[in-house]
Amino acid sequence: MKIGVDLDGVVFDTEKEFRVYSELYDMIDLKQNSKIDNKENNFKDRFNWTKEDTAGFLKKYHKQIILEANFMPGAKRVLKMLKEDGHTLILITARGGINKDMIKITEERLKQNDMDIFDKYYWATEDKVEACIKENIDIMIDDSIKKCKSIADAKIKTIYLQDAPSYDLAENEYVRVLYDWGEIYRYIKEIEKIENK
Image 1: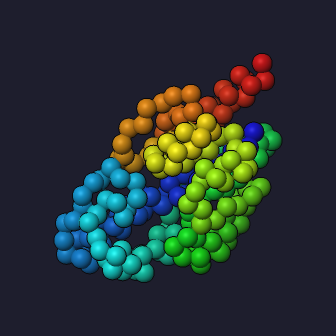
Image 2: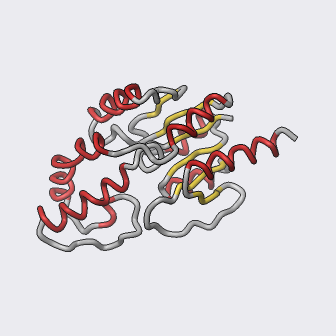
């Protein structure tokens, strides 16, 4: 199978790092309490910040977050197992869209951790549906409810990796809500069994 994999909140635990640093930035740097919706995945949608506030946050913390974020528990092991099982892994991420320097930093981190295992890379990709269709993706793994909905609407199987407060997403033929990489591996093996009957 061709498996599309998002990066932030899926391979790296960056979303939790963004949550921590955005809270601190709002309280300490901006000296305010401007949170409007804690369930939003993107920090820009959780706070009532101006463009200048957002730019200040990214300038101060973006690189630090990218360098500090740990791998999601089980991500390295399961991705390597999927690769060994013969699956094609395609990284499809928005990372690099805000700051192109993050691509090189990320490539180096993946290499240092023996995780340069992806067959193809889509950096700075906002339209993941287009990339999934172009690559004929069988399953896409993402942590954005909006991205998962749009990919599933295109009739592509999607795993919504829910690991932080967010809105509920109703499961259907094209969307499964899972909570860790162990569940992801089990689900992919179940699909393989069905397809190989």
